[in-house]
Image (cartoon, rainbow, N blue to C red; front, side, top):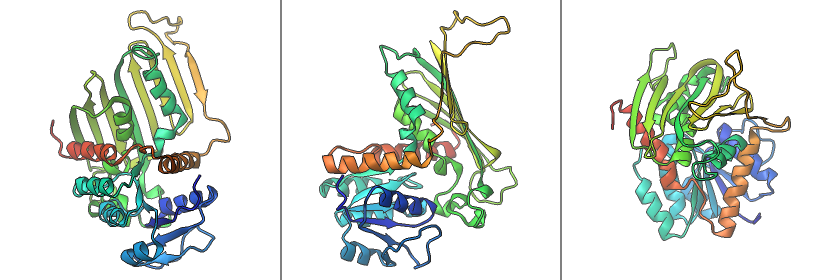
Length: 340
């Protein structure tokens, strides 16, 4: 680990503070902050230099790495400034609310020999790493050929940050790049990671809940992929209690991942040859639970270890800018409502 990196964190909301704490835990000591106003931190108990002028921060602090953790709509303008200043980038998901400036950002990074990663930390979740391994094990994977999947991620937006008015949060505002299609885009990135870029996207946004926000309240997204897989992704800001479930059906089995319960269940079967009990139930082939010591923050820590390992070794971190932009492209197509 090269602990000499000079790290500038741009935007210090809850995820920005999380990254600062984690960077400190990993031994990085040269950390500064850029934020528009010199306000006190909500949950940091140590002193960090604060800049309220980005150009001055980039010139005087001269970061080798810049973390972009401000509201979604501001990601690319800040990232471009940092890339022009010869800084590597870690950009929180989603990379932006649209695709403007993405190609310029890629060109700038390439010309300056800098690297960037988009922060989709669910790629580091043990259950999804296990699923990816099963899908790529043998000719068609241990599960056989994937056929279709359903995912549900539902949250109650007012419960996210009870210390603030949810209607003013970036997630609730179209001008800040909010809405579940973008804010909850982890599942879209996981689909790209597992199956590639979708061929078709259909979106059904819904704004009929009692939430007083100017973005979609929920959305159902139908996708199809080149190898014949279809998917139904449901994302919403309305559910209480929350729900985060994946169900994947394959020719030789089925997987159910409940992220909040911390369980993965695999049933092994061949269509037409399913061996069930008299009551119709099927005994799972594999049941996994997360260890008691597992903490969600472990995913953020592993993500950071991987990112800095890539910077120090010269390996290209993933998802990179182009791959991270695919989730934005899917969300845009879904919000356009029609078949594209």
